[in-house]
Length: 216
Image (cartoon, rainbow, N blue to C red; front, side):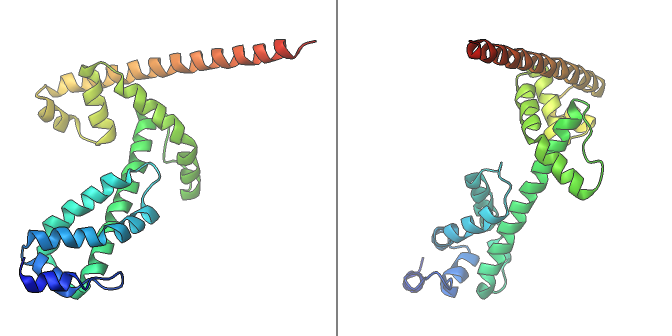
């Protein structure tokens, strides 16, 4: 980094990103880019927190934004537009994560035959909120499937990949993928049914214990 850019960097404040540092980063100065991100990271984090879903990890999203900043900084035409440009990038990534989270929840419900997405928009929001815990249970159960079933089921469910795409990724015939996903779903339903039965049994035992303990 040239000495002038270093001097410019010393003038950075919370109100305005110095155009000299931005210009250097646009031209490929890696040190300027690193320092620019260090200076912007805190306010970017605040933006992300305002838009991201609760389930999303802040650090993961910040890493994604930093990588996108590295890839796209050279496309910025006006250094003065940097802050608004980076803010838009952060908001878009946070919102995209929210959409992925919503799709993931719906996919988890569909995976075991539950309906998701019916009704009015408000009803769907309420339904998804109530289903959050159920979707987490399904996800954790899916991760405990045998490897041969776990991977195709999660690729289908979480990544919304087609049978053909999963076939290419795993190097297996499409018919094999279809069979494994069907069997994996059946295994998952059975696993969840057993978990529910166990939880209900424990709940009854607790209630019975409370009733016995409260008797004179």
